[in-house]
Length: 200
Image (cartoon, rainbow, N blue to C red; front, side):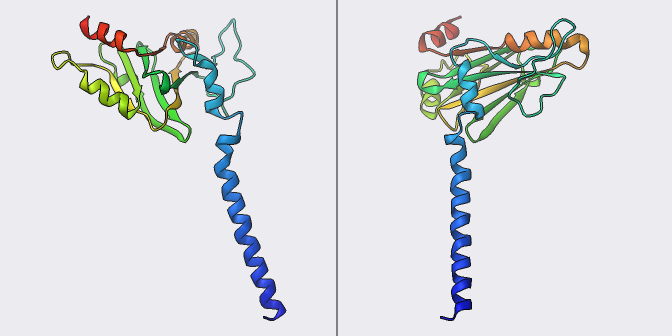
């Protein structure tokens, strides 16, 4: 092989190797990163309500200077509920009101379900996030005479988080938006609790 052919072959091999390394690094970033959204959200796993991530500025309290959202919207209060379905299904409950509220369920690869307060039934929005096995078990144990109003979501992964957003269209609504985020309940559903709910 002449020198030009060898040079082209070496260049091509170098480009292929560089491409493979680049792809491997990009795919490894979520698992290697200690500051990804899932890792930061895990600090809320022990809480039974949404952990504020971005609190809106009010007349008394300014907006926090440190928020781990890329570009926080100055009129949207944000909270996080992390879950690990190894502990059981996660129930996220929100009371709806005058302010627009949305819930988005995320796995490590991104959001896979979202809903707004327009889906609320009698002023309440209840999401239950389950694995496929937990979903099948819930269906098997369901009372045919008692129709559940829960929105059941089969998660793509065992770990993830729910992002709660409440919009304050007016400055006077900012405090109410902050309170609405923290009022969202995030609890682990147990079989005993499910039986009590169906019995009530």
